[in-house]
Amino acid sequence: MDTLYSPKEWILTSMDIISKRIGIVGGGQLGKMMILEAKRLGFYVVTLDPAGDCPSHSISDEHIAAGFDNPGAYVQLAEKTDVITYEFEHIDAAVLDLLEKKGYTIYPSVESLKIIQNKYRQKRMLHDNGIPVPGFCLVESIGAIKRFAEKDSVGYPLMLKTTLGGYDGKGNALIYGDEDVKDAFQLLGGGKTELMAEEYVSFDKEVSIIACRAIDGTRVVYPVAENIHKDSILDVSIVPARIESPAQILVSEIAGRVMDVFAGVGAFCVEMFVKKNGDVFVNEVAPRPHNSGHYTIEGCFANQFENHIRAITGLPFGSTRLIQPTVMVNILGENNGAARLTGLDTAYSDPDVHVHFYGKSESRAGRKMGHITVIDDTVEGALRKAEMARKNVKVVGIFCLE
Image (cartoon, rainbow, N blue to C red; front, side):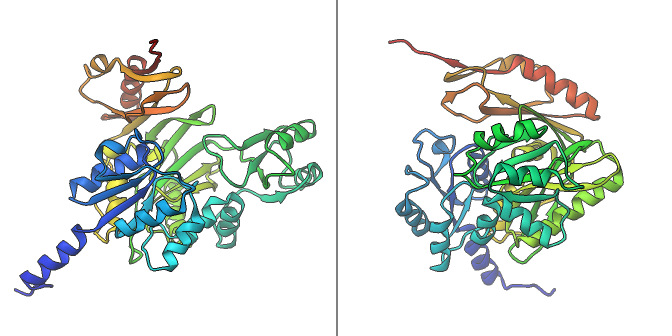
């Protein structure tokens, strides 16, 4: 029988893949979940994060405790590993760029990171490649914002955003009319900070989709997640999304095109708006696994973190098929103080409930401390069980008085 490799060659090829050392910039919950999948496959993992007690610390083979603005720490990470990836975007792309030019391997590429870090450049890249996005422009003054709103296709309300930084609603301001423009401009640091104005999309559903792309360009796409936000923070993800089939297909097709636009390697999240008429617009792209993809851990045969690790190490992808309808709800900190998880025993009286506690040492009101996933025969059943579990599971801050 014909074989692709002789036994000896196969062993060498397999060992070449499995012996890779992975460096991760960021030691939060996303990094921790990447490591759990990497360690299952036997990879050696080095984490770069300034916090000595970050969620990834306890399971990293090595932890470089240094700031994300420390060039020497990035060099150290590169020298210790074969491939570098990252769990969030707000890192030193200039240093990574120098490392990449010296021959170090970084996925997703630094070029895609630099574009995505800047929301205006990201939108421009998408627009120029035929990806549907809301209308947008750079604005340097209060007058420029008002002129943008006066365009026939825009009007109020509209979104004002900082082009750099910003997450979970931070760095955004919704402008309802002329009277709000000055306050929003000042709130976001107008005149000192680069700002962009964006057409507000009156959407029916907010959705997101995780797409993964391999080094050779092979792509896989996960099911579409319907997302519900509270105070601009993701609250609930529902899979499959409750949208019509043509919109499901369009969202998946757009996600694949976005991966090709950025030549991404690894897992990307593409957040989109779906209007009642079925039109779809891309909101933002994240070059990494995403909060809205946590449902894949229990809900899919191969989760987003596993396929991210597979992509950056040259392994074929696992199946992205949904096992059953799945709901994920976030667990936010109740107050400030040393983090303490309560109610786990009560929540686990339902065998369909899966609780993920990230291991952050400090709780803060509104901080993402964990999540709950439920799979069930129906979306309605999963939603009901997830919300019941969240009523019991709390992360509270405890103050210790000496």
